[in-house]
Image 1: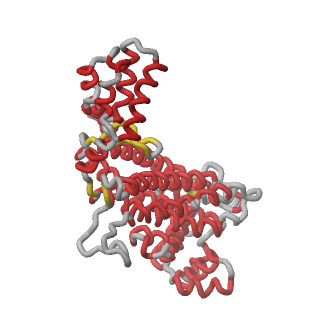
Image 2: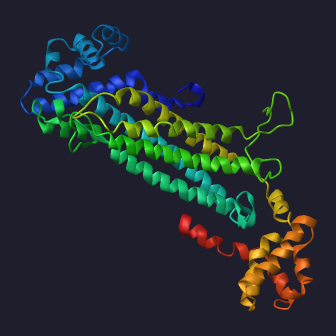
Length: 431
């Protein structure tokens, strides 16, 4: 990914230096186990530990001739280790190194993603509690529906990302497997104990049946989870973008001193961060279908998945990592306008209480069909004439025949809509 949408901590996981160091660790741990089994001399392992090294530029140079990255790596390591290098890679195949390395990279990447998720969750919780009782307009189809609170909106986002956190943990477990099983995965030339040892040293589980490659259903699940997390980021971003529209302006991204919104119109304050996050979410989801298509490999293995993973592994994790931290920053600094929220609540002359009037009429003995007609005909006049909904209802003889004027006034109490906010918060955040 380009530096603009990258954090160095995540990028470092995918740098060639990091990758080759993991390869060297895998080979060294495998030699440790081989020595314990008596397959190779203990002094060879000592030499490999002490002298094992590599140079990225030299590996690239060798690969130009060999056209094989693992062979180029092993050749370069042998230049440092000397004669004992003949014991490196005993009974192993390239996929043992490549697949296990990818598992290490993805688990490390997930740890960073979880850190970003925790930052976002903390921000959502703080702002939700801050605006727990900040009443605002709830909308369906983009149209005023009934009141809610801005805290409830943020609590919903918290609950969603809390589920995403659990999904990431499950995805980390799913992808965290090691395969050191040799050609076609039969362990014919390497003892399963080697795989178990390498897995333990790397903090992985050993793969149940690797068939020379780790089954790609694991990777498909992993990238699907990243896609779900990205979609949740887009959902929250879209909400903020709508709330920032000039006609709504209930909340907006922090606008710093000296920041410019438009090259042509100096007044502009655009939701550029959440628009950017909407686009980045598309890039993360772009990895999902190729990961699904990687599942169906030929027989015990082929490498049709390889080119895909070399791109989607870094791109999806780097992008999502950046997006999580950007989203957290948006929430941490989000500017909220309670006065604008109240103004929008008052915009339609009390229509937001229509359901409560409908229910009161049915409770008073009016049929639902008639009650709906009584309420709707007055509501439509508010839309067209801008009148007070309450006053129109009080002037409607069929309405007041069932519900008195005083009772109607009680139905317009805003507190009615927030009476269960505490219950919602307990469900989301606990006691």
